[in-house]
Amino acid sequence: MTSGSETRAVSPTESVLQSVLASAERLRTSPEVVDLLRTSWREVRAQVPVRMDDRSLRIFEGYRVQHNGARGPYKGGVRFHPQADLDEVRALAMLMTYKCALMDLPFGGAKGGVMCDPTHMSEGELNRLTRTYTQHIGMVLGVNRDIPAPDMGTNQQTMAWMMDAYGARYGYTPGIVTGKPVELGGSFGRDQATGRGVAICMREIARREGVATHEVRVAIQGYGNVGSWTARVASEMGFRVVAVSDVKGGVWNREGLDIAALDRWFSVAGSVAGFEPADPITNEQLLELECDYLVPAAIGEVITAENAGRIAARVVVEAANHPVTPEADAILRRRKVLVLPDILANAGGVTVSYFEWTQNIQQFRWPLERVLAELENRMVAVFRELMARSERDGTEPRDAAFDIALERVARAIQLRGFV
Image (tube, rainbow, N blue to C red):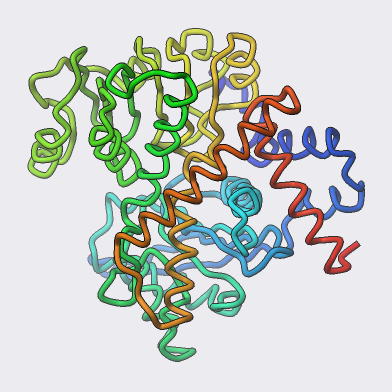
């Protein structure tokens, strides 16, 4: 973001399009295919009136954007956040199209959002908000049409409410959402899937570098579902997690943090701030901390042209969606900082969502061991495919990821006769 009266130079949608158009040029993709992918197939904008606990009526704005469904039903999370506007949701839907294609999942890309602050709403208010939102977008959902999942500001409980609201109109349909509680048809391992996928990517990078995990210092910005699970699994793998942060602050310990003790602290304090033995650190300081692997796992666009030159890590693993702006990406490339793109690094969530959807259709639950083994196999295979493509073409991992994904989407568009 720029200061003063200036506005952001590149919107989230434009940011994603830059990667897509660059890939299309490298691949010489048909202009007609590119025209189809520039915009969304469908965008639903819904008024979401909610009776608050004080009996006042508040009207929120909600969206469901379906970008491209050539490869299968639309798939993507639902975000409850004050900045979840149409452009942000549109950009995330685009990313989902290419994320699913890169992971070779039989899905297209979608995303949902409601512009609200869930941290200042009661459980009853969030319940009513979720049900009204689901009712107003229900006509575009379906097990073989569009399957939502949790995202920032939403969780298993949100998905349970969505499933119930959809079922009240269309009948009991557990496969309509993923990321729901296990008791309602959810999959074992779904809560840890995104963070585990990030940690698997980190381990594969370390193997490529020929370094032991205990020699790698990791800093993680964000300690929500993704960041906390990344820290837990990375710690189990032997990585030295030296810093973590959340919206209230962060902590740093040169020798490494005791993640189990940190989780106990967090469960009581509601924040990592104040944990000992560790020194306090801000989110901004964490990004520029001297470490080996930096994991932005909170919100988008935290690494910008202003701070990219001060990033001290040699590897950035994008656990959040588009945490690096295009301008910052160019700076990191010049500085030879390896950036593992979000459409691979955080794809563990949608991968296990696919497993959950499959289990719901089959009405057969997999044990946790199978879920984790399948996730491991797919993440490792796609990581190696991406890095091999990067080396073959002499491109950065982000370029290779979009090239693989765009080839698959374009092929599906052509096979289906869209162009």
